[in-house]
Length: 165
Image: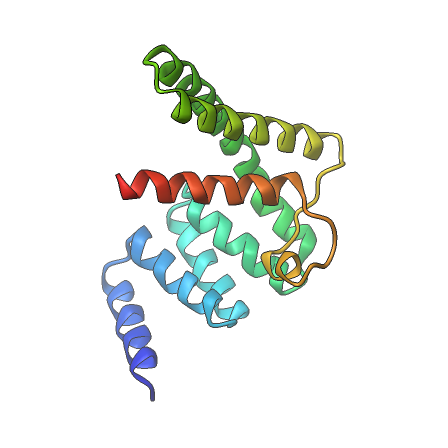
């Protein structure tokens, strides 16, 4: 058994005694990153039964289901994330105005761009024009880039920038 396998076993044992959302997410994400999609889906389902409002657990379950080709269930699982992203858009719009009022124009522009991407992406999804493109397909160049994918890339860039400060 590999060192990683041992640590996964220890994590599972620990979770049986003390389930917590963060560790359950870590387990599901580790399975997902290793391409063990059925295990990732099972782990995230179990976690969501305890923490139904956790958006990260919902996302990893949705990603696992997409990877398994379970598109209808994945869509049902991911729909609450669209609502959360809409609320996040309003946060970025408020930050746009806040930073602009402080004279921090570069930060205001970034927040405004994220708001625009989120708003356009959600509008496109609402009209049935946007698509969920799995990262693997986008990396391989399959299909056109969706608003959602561009938005997620911008959010990751924003998150890295915030973490570096």
